[in-house]
Structure formats: structure tokens, C-alpha cells
Image (cartoon, rainbow, N blue to C red; front, side):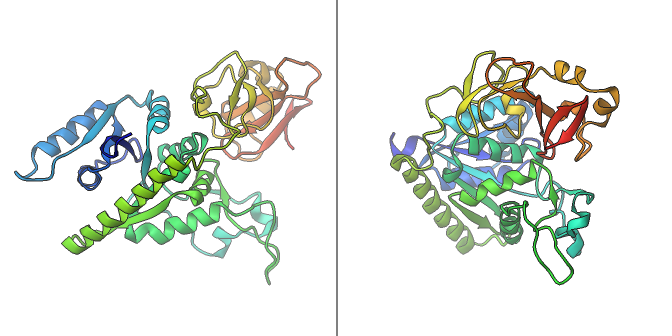
Length: 350
């Protein structure tokens, strides 16, 4: 593929505030590589076009490919765009004005005896962007992903990536007794850990001077060039996932090799793109209605015994690719990642 025909995918929260200035700037900086691809609604496309038409005469040319989709379609569309991209720019920004803070040691590192009753924490950005991180990993594109963020947010983002990468199965010994190494985190927030293998981080600053813009542009071009070279060298791909295989989306009655381990799985009732956590091994999804019929009314109303999430947020399955009435029906909560099992019409933690 010629240097000027690369597809550089720009990802941000799907329902985020307009960032037209940044999109246009990135397009100009990376013009020699190819087209900057953005995904959004028709309304977002129209507002971007209006912004571009109002630019001053003599502004750098724009090379943006805008892929339109609805909110209902975006998960599948994003899979396709990731799979065809040469490099990905991931813009991480707070959902509100600032990132959430964890005040006090007890919030960040709860005592062991309080850990399982402590509240779950929201750490970062919108759920859509965190899902995109999950999809980047499933499609083995993390090593060709460059994080873009405001310089003021860099240390927070890096610390959250490190925090979510911490093994939570062990507790730290402290003078006050054993403490958890992290707060209790939702399944989506834990996706940040996948970014520890990203190609790099290129922060920008609001202090808009020519020298700062030049330094940002130079750093970004260098990172993009390295990421594309990794593609040419074949980095980031594993034998477990065949890059020519169908995208891990939708439902199917047939066995498919799916993430995270590339084993055959039958997921016939839940769209794969809606699953945050897919169990390892050869598995067969148990129809949600059938699984709920195995539970008492109280267990159904209670939902996940760990996080109290609705039973509709739980993925039920058995090991093997054929229904076996003697096989235990297991479950994975898509909200808190707890492993569960149906036993005596109750959901129990395993």
C-alpha cells in the first residue's frame, strides 16, 4: 500500500462533544500518510462539514473520510473500521469536565474486610470509548494504537492504565492491615489495562503556539510511522486469532473461533459485540430465558450476587458445543466480571 493511501482511524466517545478543531488538525498533520477516518452520526458529519466550510482561505487541505452510522449500528461499524485501519488514534478525554477523583486511601485501596462491600468506582471516560478499547484488543490492533490526550490528563490516564493492570487477586500488606491493590472496578473500566501495550501516547496542550504545534505534529508523525511499520513487520498478531476470520460480531448457531482464546464457541442469543467478557474454552451459550427459568423468582430479581446487576447483564453458558443436561450452567457477569454458577435455583459465586 502506498504511503499516501493509509487509513488512520480516529476513535473517540461516540456521543462526545464536537472536537472539530482536533479532527481537522490531525487530518492536516497526517496528510502525507493518508486519510483520517472518523465515525459518527449524520448530524456529526454535517456539523463537521459546516466547521470546515467556515475555515479561513488558505487553510491546509482536509483529507477526512467520515463514516456515517446510527448509535444502534456503531459497534458493528467500528469493528469493520478497526479491521481495515493501518493505525488508530484513540482520543481519551473525561466524560464530564474532569476525570473522577478517588479521595482518601480508603477509596483507592480499601481494607480487605471492606473490599467486597465497597462501592464500584467509575475511573475514566464514556462507556463507548472503553468498548472501543475492548474491540481494538479483540482485533489485535492495540500495538498499532496511539493515545491522544490533553497534556494535563496524561499522568491521570497513565496511572489509571497502571492501576487497572494490577492483579486484584492478592492483597497488599500494610501497617493498617491487608488492603486491596485497586478500588472495585467495573468490567468496562478494566479495559483500560489493555492500553499498556499501546504504541505510545502523544499529548497536546491548550497553549497554542507555533513551536508547540510543531512539536506535537512531529511526535505524532513519528509514532504513526512506527505503528504502521509494526503492521508491515507483522507485530501484534497471534496464532490464536486468524486475521482473515469473520469479525467477532452478531450471533450464530454455528461454532466460531472467538476471543479471548480463539477456541470454538456457540454464541447464538447475545451479540458478541455486546459481551465485555467472553469465557475461555469451548462453550455454548444457554438461552437467557432458559437460564432464567432455572432460577427462582428471588434469584432472578436479585441478579448478580456480587454487584446486584440485572440478570439481563449476565451471560449464561455451559462447557462444550452440545447441550448436556448434566453440565453445570455457568455464568459471567458483564458488569463486574464475577464467575457464577446456577445451583439449587440460585446464582452463586464460584
